[in-house]
Length: 170
Length: 165
Image 1 (spheres, helix red, strand yellow):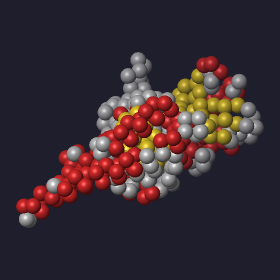
Image 2 (cartoon, chains in turn green, orange):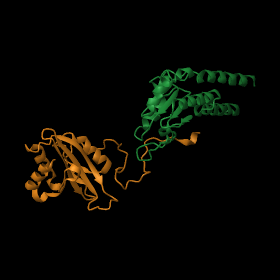
Image 3 (tube, chains in turn orange, yellow):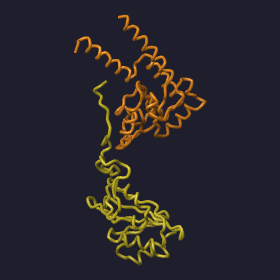
Image 4 (cartoon, helix red, strand yellow):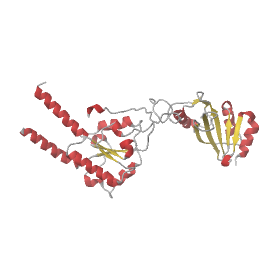
């Protein structure tokens, strides 16, 4: 019992650290990229939230921002980049095109990136205002701090299953 | 503006010129498919024509329009920098027989435009050096800019398994 409480608290501490040090991988494909630049630049200053350092390698980042329209032809590349991200990983769908396909309803555009990878926070807008993006980042920080992102919950579920298996002595 | 081009074509090719029009200073000529190469060679090589610039090449799907004698139409826009005139060459095509000779031998710039037209409309250019899809992927079936292509038809390359959540 004592051990369990300790591990939970350790997890909380780790999550507290994680939420203030996002390493962003910007997957930018379209006009929303202009708003991403605006958020990253000094006026709106994403650095205030500890996420100021875009790494252009998925292996060095844990937050993937999918900024812009994703086409069917691009989908395998997006999936591959997501698989290469460092654990625990989070995804923000930036703008309506990434969230739902936006005003594209045709043969070439994926109707929302959640068809390909799990998404933690959706930011609406075409493109979203920088304030909306900051709001999205704060929401994600909250989620990460509480350990409620898709990736963290899956890890917890798997840990629980392992524990169950051990206690059953399989 | 480019009426001289239309007159020259009419006097030289006669019956092969199906129709001419000069609406809105936009000269266009409709040519039978078997004379296309001959007409285009003349347009490029004749001293008075000298069409040296390939502007665009595409296809028109007339499905659903009030006047539809033939469903598809090839449209080629040409321009001459030296003579300062331009012309549009159209070729009627019947459904199920979308075959035209390639123009990439005359203007190299039409190479990729013909690949795009093949990709989007399924027009086959006979004699094209490398006729395959240019924008879409090989798994894609059909030609999406045809008017009867279903709006919701997709050919996904990657989808997630939802079961693990």
